Length: 457
Image (tube, rainbow, N blue to C red; front, top):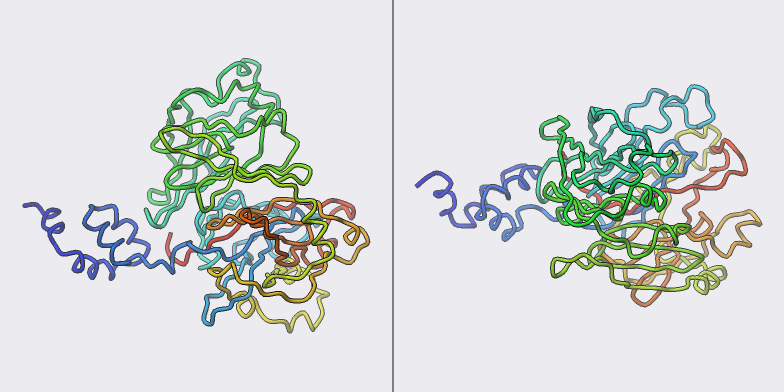
């Protein structure tokens, strides 16, 4: 009898008692050793759920003229909840005191853009992987990819699942550039190609590896067709597969094309988002106040989109113009204002710290508590606005879409019942001061944040 067989014969409770002494970041790896270990970990709750990214903590919001992202969170209703801050200023900076894009010596402005996120980790443009909850971070080397043909660039996507592995991976995936003409010799080629070359960085090895992903099934179209229907959609990771650009699912060194639920070329002038939530992978489209939501059905070996919800949001926006009561108000951290506005008042400096105000528990999202009115803003433009709507993200565990109205107010829209709640102000303090052009519109990138409290990654 070999050693593995002897270990497998140990009772589950004995294995579980041994594995409880293993650091949390290695329990995920322990699950992969054999079925007996996996059953012991899962059956005895050894991998602590309170450390895993299983609850919504808030929203990251990055406005284009800000150096660092902002963070929106709801106050805690539970005593002793862990404090969460979205402040990333603990990362190295070549110009730490420069907070305005128009300053000449602000040389590292775009290093803090969030390119991707996965299960509590953030992938930043400056080659950082960051865990905001634990304030741990590390860097990864630039991808050593070969020469890229005209009209193609490589997007970076993050994969991290602490229930499967203590390590993360960064995928560098070829993408068509809609702003640049492609090489004419490529226009009639299939996209994605039958063999798609990608690069994968593993935090385990610390190295990049070139990998060929084999396409299963038909291509999405020709290069010319796909470039014309370009859609800037982020990737999502769900149950071992990476869904990129709304059209490709990557797993086990293969890629499968998933036809989008709408003609992106014909219906391209609208906001689109791909997300994960309660029932799996979702596709959201918003056009002239019409919100449509599809769910990806992967049963019977086929992948197809099923329409879940279609609703005109304009009546809801008209109601909220006059009724702006807040359901358990969420708090905007005003990170950039606090870091870079030296003229802030003594009253501002005496406000509670991040640790004092951002302790909350998101497990109970269904209770109703209302506080006083939340303002859209002080300008006449904001008061007259019925609500230019943008998608902020989808709740990762409930069918709730987060929206912004006039880039000032956050809304939570429940797909089941079409109920809408104002969650609070999302417009950062004195944001106009950070703009390089006073009349420039707001560009917001955002996503829901699920904290992971495992220290190592």
